[in-house]
Amino acid sequence: MEQPSKRLDSLIKGFPVELIQLILCELPDAIALRAAVLSHSVFYHAFVAAKDLIPVQVLINQIEPDLLPDAFAVLESLRIKPWSRERVQEFLAHYHENRLTPLPTWTMSEAVSASALYDDIAFFITDFAAVALAAHPVTGTLDISPPALTSDEKTRIGRTFYRFEIYCNCFRQYGWKDNRFRAEEQPEIFFDKYSPWENDQLACVHDYLYRRVLSVYNEFAAHDIEWGEEMVGYRDDDDWHDGDNTWKQGTLSFGLNYVRRLITAETYEERYRLLNPNRRSDWDSLHAGLWATNREQEDDDVELREYSKSYERHWIPPPRLDDPDPGPEKAWRWANQHESRGGWFVAASHRALRERGYVMWDLERLHKWDLFRAPWSSGPDVRFDTEKSQQEYEAMQRSWAERSKIYQRGGTGWWIEGDESRVVWKKDDPPRPRVRVINWP
Image 1: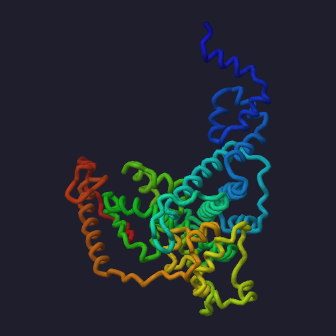
Image 2 (image 1 turned 30 degrees about the vertical axis):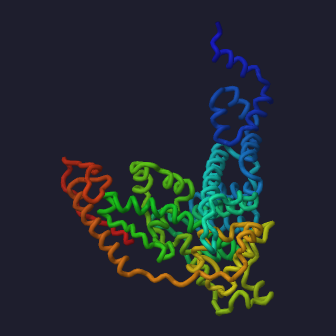
Image 3 (image 1 turned 180 degrees about the vertical axis):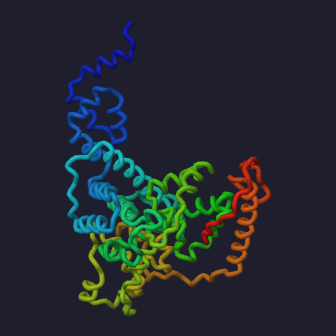
């Protein structure tokens, strides 16, 4: 009797090549396409005969049409190799002027890269919305079942995450002695191309990603023995610095796939493999670039509500991309009506609004919240608890000292005060030299 595998092989070989190609075109994403092509020589040869068509069609199956240009732009930004200031400026000029020519063909590796990134984008769209919509942006009232995202909201959030990835590819630090763009150089070639509410959309994504990384990073820094030896800070008062911790900013700069793997890692060992070899300080981060864009404005203390039409045309850039819904612009104008242009985005007083993604939503959702009923007020300033902060810092110093002693005795791994059961000892190693790289908190 003929084996089932042989019967299946005969059946596949009997299919017309055109039918095989149609089947491949219907696959849901490029990762499934790659698996199919590698599964049988018939699929492989059918793919090769139409390799200019099939990857594009599969990506169209997966990625919404409105996000395809962003997916293409990310791929183009990955082609800036070797990295140079001139290449980045040329890419950004074409990108912001909508002059990037869509690829006539996509290679399999490019299609897989675009497919994998879209999967990360979809993950973050869902997670961002779940966090942002969990409570009313003004009253703080919990909402356990907010209305589902509209297609425009999904596109808006997705575009912002793609823009974050493009920013990382263009501005991340490549080595210690690179010729990267400093924060004060970034507005002219990047942030100034966007309206203030588009920049605050990027600030919303930054704040969300920073908060997602913060707890993972701090927990690791509080317990890893090597990080204790190197005095890596992990205090919980980063909000007082508006998220401007350069080491955590360096973690964000690796991009969305890295951040996703980090925040979903379930074990110490997984996080160790991600964090330990990739620790870097980023002084010219997205956060720093946004602040530099605010600072470059010649603030004349004129509030937004007092702007004339001619003044608006001069000082408020139009949105780079058309948005069919006026919700984001109206939300931004509502929150900033009493602000002068030196504080139009990434403002500390708007942190609570950014946590709720206030410039991401359609007007209908904003009206249901009754958002515009009264001017925005951040409430009374919360006094910084100097004594508590000092106590936390002293506790952190004691932790550093204890873990340093263990490291000098040959220990690595996970440490908890009073519990060394997860310390890995290397008893045969000679005492380690005491060389510290101080990562100030």
